[in-house]
Image 1 (cartoon, rainbow, N blue to C red):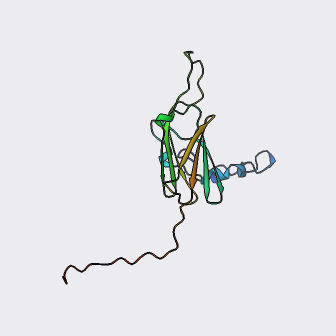
Image 2 (image 1 turned 120 degrees about the vertical axis):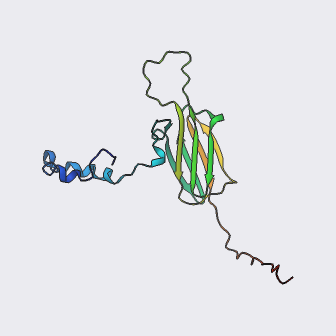
Length: 160
């Protein structure tokens, strides 16, 4: 769950599993098995990972990754695609039009998100667009050829 939550929490509170007459803690048991991605957590909170939401859709041999990033500064976006991994980094800012902030709940600053894809994708066919706060990354599956590779010839320099 996290480093502050006890591992054997069920044993520590044996009389509470049937809280209010029902199995209350079974609804949160799945949280115990969740691991926090070490790359997604930084000590100084410079990178906001949790606010970058992504939906991934598949159709045939294509993937569509849609990131919700309102206020994304497009000139600062860096997208890296390698094998089965898509990495997105950039910066988010909200234009306050000269107003003084009273309450700020929308994240502003540097963002980074690494997404594991269901299969390897081509790096030469990546199409990206930005529309209404959504960054849309269109990827194509890498299909390896079934042809047999030509035999590599070894030149014997000692016999020449």
